[in-house]
Picture 1: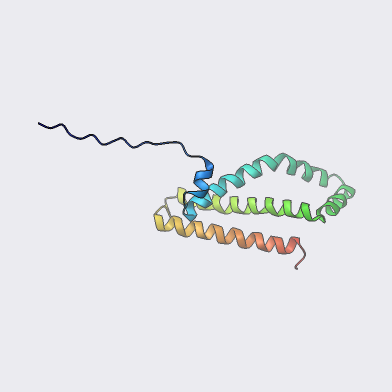
Picture 2: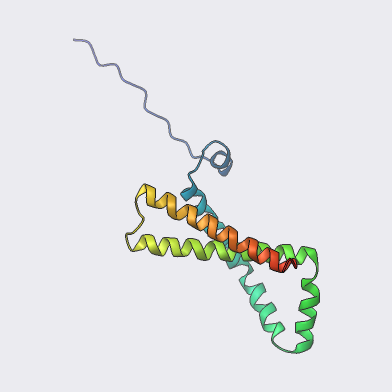
Length: 137
């Protein structure tokens, strides 16, 4: 009797973030999931700073006027816009995950549709805020 030919076992290796972002083509639902996590970390890290600014702006009218003057700087406006994007995307994606927790839109097609809705709605809201922030209306 001849012995069975053994196939080599597949080799699994850990992959880095570079391979994930360049080699793999994530679906939109995967990108929304990653952006949800990134925006959550960004909001968490900036929360103490934002709360301190909010508290100081409420202490007097002078500090509020100071913050209005600081907000006229372009760099500060861009930082505020990034934080607004993070909040809006995290909020919309959070609603998506709450919908998925109720066992709606858990199919592949439903995941694609809700991810597209999150991307579009959060982008439109961020664009509307950017137009208001930079004085378009």
